[in-house]
Image (cartoon, rainbow, N blue to C red; front, top):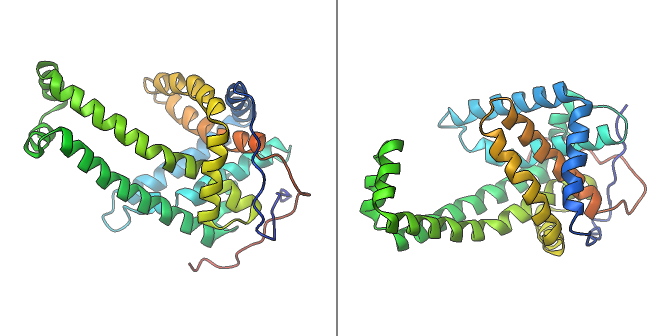
Length: 269
């Protein structure tokens, strides 16, 4: 049975509410709860997604596809989370729901994400170049990991310069993360256009900064723990995808009767 999802056929933007800071911890708890209901399906879905991305990046022709399709697959994880949360189960095919529902807008969302990532990547290069000489960057790129670690230990001023550049870049990337956090759900559930969804996503995140800080306090240590386990990291990555739905549900409460989203009926952009 197809899940009934909210959509706004008039393209009217939903209202984002401000939630208490500790709501961020509930997103993590709720996400693990949804994961625990069908862990095998979640992990299999993630494995399929990972293998597809791996195939794409191994091809010089398809290397940009992971970024272009990011909104489509994120929408699939969110759709599956909604279905499971509503007691209607979880299926592998939910991963590909974005290709059947709002395909064009979700693909355009990926295009915007790719363009923004490219511009921010260029900005990172410029910022890094303002702290570190270009030749030094080239020299460090030719070092092995152990040699690089030894070099940075012997050159604390270069390490400080790199940390400053990374910090500034993270500050620049924050709006992109905020823009892409709720955007797939807003396109899928409320029929918003990509730019409209990204702007509203930024506003919603900005309105709930303290809740996201608490969310980060809980999720960052889990990411670090996941790095030491082959199985642990996929679980954490799935939980992060689920948490996009949980935070959406918290900040964008239902504002209309649940309806089935309109099918695009085409894969043409």
